[in-house]
Every structure is written in C-alpha cells, then in structure tokens.
Amino acid sequence: MLTFEQARHEVVTQISKLKRVPTTVNLSVWDAAGFVLAQNLIADRDYPPFNRATRDGYAVRASESPAGATLTCIGEIKAGDALTQPLEKGTCIQIMTGAPVPPEADAVVMIEYTARDREFIHFQQSATKGQNIVPAGSETAKDQLLLQPGTHLGYAEVGLAAQIGATQLRCAKKPRVAILSTGDEIVPVDASPGPFQIRNSNSVSLAAQIREAGGDPVMLGNASDRIEILGDKIQLGLQEDVLVLSGGVSMGKYDLVEDVLKTLGASFYFDAVAIRPGKPAVFAMCNEKPVFGLPGNPVSTMVTFELFVVPAIDLLSGAPARTLPFLKATLAEPMREKPGMTHFLPARVQFDSGEARVKPLPWQGSGDTVTMAKANCFLVVAADIQTLAAGENVNVLMRRGIY
Figure 1 (cartoon, one colour):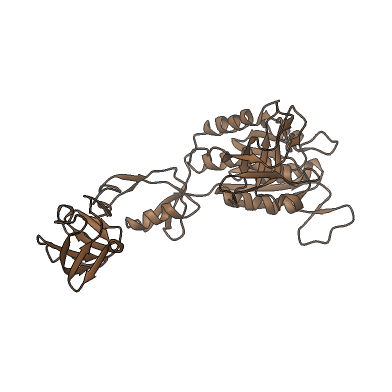
Figure 2 (cartoon, one colour; figure 1 turned 30 degrees about the vertical axis):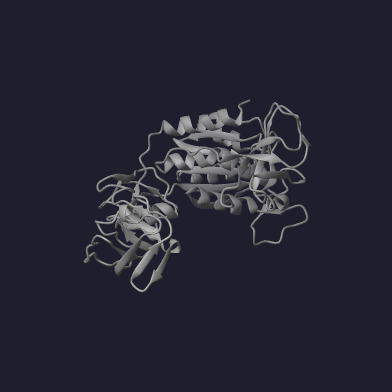
C-alpha cells in the first residue's frame, strides 16, 4: 500500500506524461484572479519610475542636515506633482509620501523629527543618505520578466498586472472536473431524505473544493448501484478533463466503481493509500483522462481531494503541482493514535500567542461533517507515531479557503 506521498507522486508523474497544453482564454484583469497565467508579463517601465518618498517630511541633502541644523523650506511636493523647483544649497522642500524626490536631495527626514518656525525647519535628528527614499528602478527595471506562464493569479498578481497596464491577460482555461456521486442511499440536496437516505452533500463540497483549487466543476448528479447506470455516467464524465467519483470504491458487494472502470480499459495506479480517513482512494487513467475514486464518507472525500486531486488540477492548468501547505504547530494536549497509517484529523489551530497552537477536535469518524465544519486544519500524525505529548511540534495541513 502506498504512502500518501508516494500516491501523490504517482498522480503528478502520470498526469505530467500527458503533456497537455491547456487551451487559453483572454480575460480582463478584473476577472483573472483564480486563473493560471499563460503569458509572460513584462515591466513597461522602471518601478518606481522616480525616486519615491516613503514618509511625510522634508527632502534634504544629508550632508546639510545633521542634528541641530536649520534649513529654509522653499516649497512643497505632493504625490503626483511634477518636479519644477531645484533644491538649492541650504534649503529643504516639504514632501509627502509617494511624491518624487528632487534629484539634488538624497534623504527625506520624517516630519516627526523636525520643528517648524515659519519657513525655517529645525532638524532634531541627523539625516543619513538614502533614508526614506525608494530609488527609481529598485523594485524592477523596464523590460524585466515579472510573471511567467504557470503562475496562479491572486490579488497581488492581478494588482501587479494592472500596475504595468496589462489590462487583458491570456490565461489557461480552468480544467473541467466532472463530479459523480454513487450509491442508492443518496438523494438530491433539495430532497427530503427517507429514514435511511442522505443528501448528496459530497457533490456540493467537492464543487467548492474544485473552485478553490482552480477548476470548473461539472455536476453529473448521482449514479445508483447498477453497473449499466454507473457505466453510462462514467463515460459521460470522461468527456471532461478530470472525473472525480465519491463512493463505491471500498470492498463491499455494491462498490462497483473499479469494476466498471476496468471494463472501460482503465489503468490503475493505486486503489488504497495508507491514510486514515481515506484509505480506499483510487487513481486511474481512462481514455487518457485522470479518474479519481474517492471514499464516500464526507471527511474522507475532503482529505483525499486535497491530497490527490488538487495537483491534477494544477498540472492540467499549465501550473506546477503545488506542495501541500503544511506548517508546524505546538500540540495543545496529549493524544494517541493507532500506528501504521498517516492520520489526518480535524483540528483547530490558533495563533493567539504569536505561535501556532493546535488542538484535535473530538469527532465521530469520517462521516462527521459537523466537526469538520468546526475545523480549520487537519492535524497530521505520521504512520510510525502512536503517542504524542502536549507541547510537541506536529504537522498541520491548513484547510484551503479558510486560511
């Protein structure tokens, strides 16, 4: 049985072999957040384009501004002003944050360290050359590569694109990810379930995870436990870029997903992973399409999606597979788990004391969505660990979209 690291590596390896080039779409910079960039972004000029003041104060020659010096203020420069007045010897110019610094000045003294008497400015601290000035071109030079294809576009990236005037961006189209739940016990989310039925919550949570990961969910509904019905739905899902199934992958009489995929010529790379929850996870390729069979219990579905489906969406978007966002946290209380499998346990991490401190949440197993909704992370317990003491450093996998 593969470890989750080995299984994740298998996903990356097999999908990388496809060598697919994503189709692209031109988007307004206003709409491009959440997509993957498919072009180079080049600086249109130096940034900043002038020596920029970072504080409100006075532009001076540092050599003329030791503590105790007095200079004559000959004007004012605010952000957006053009430089028209030279800085003569023995003078200073009042300047605002973001304004261009006169070429003769080499320092800005914060207004807090001065006293003003009419046009005379008394300096209480010595100026040092370069203080409170961002030199022209120090952030980036004209024609420098800023962002390249495969970059995930977040708020900083689209802000940078807007800064350089890139109002239209060529982006990879989001991979279409078909979602198919299975099981006779499943009813639509807007239905009233019978006493032994459950609503199709997995399709809703999977759609949310797909969007957060950069994919476009395609809802296929639910397939009952009939080979012919399941086969038809799977073939429909194989028309999309990725197919994700929930349920039907364990060892029960009516767990039919693997059997149906075999009849369709699928190649399997794993059908179990040494994790809890989520052990009976399946990854296959069918008609050159990645297929993931995720366990039907909701928390198992959530865990295995994050571990195995997210890197597939990355690669099919033309981006590198992102590493898992683990962080170290201090365990708040002792705990004990069965060894042999890596555990991903619902937990809450807090940063109140300035460092991450994590506490596992009491839960009723992989069907406990109520507890999962209270968690902001998974506490990760390695397969070779049985007991952990309070105060130990542990790995935490943050929930995507929450932190």
